[in-house]
Image 1 (cartoon, rainbow, N blue to C red):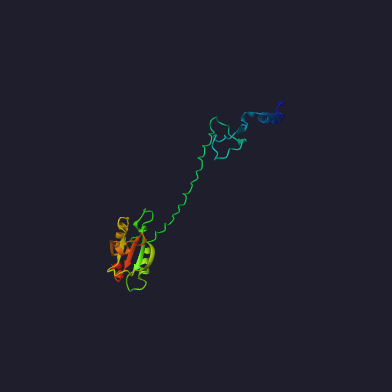
Image 2 (cartoon, rainbow, N blue to C red):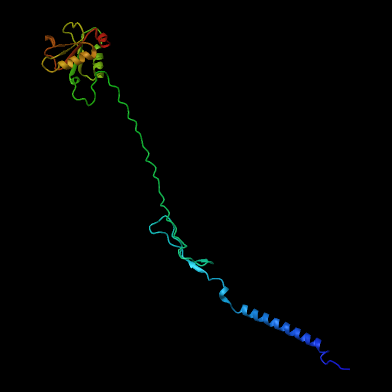
Length: 222
């Protein structure tokens, strides 16, 4: 009977081959691991770059200048991607209008009828007037003098006239002396007559002579 010498050794051979295959796979994995860990630097992240912020345009004093420094970014810088900030319009200041002040103008005092207007130039009322009483009314000359003064006339004297009976209140002027216009104006103020001087008063003191009689109040109040 013949015996196969390789029969008992076959299982051991198969086990050895299997161990060699495992060793080979392990070796391949180790090589791959070494290769990946030593340094393929092509996949490394890009280095950070610095971007300097632009300064504001020259002459703009209303915006604060940017602080010079480096701004880190993880993305690579692109030329022309950073535009300078637009200048800020200068602030304007509105000045309130000046307050206006209105000053009240005092009203002019009332002017008595026939009184001279201030600044109107020479007046016939500058003629002196002497007033004389030719009635039984006591103090009539003084009363008439106050009335004349209130209307702007210049009263030089008051008294009594006893040289004769004067029929009505009359103002007398010296002919040719320039007093006639003043006498006519005074007569118009008080509603009385005006006449040239008669002989009894012809040489009396210069100026107009007003002789008041009993009808003075009636003539004045017309």
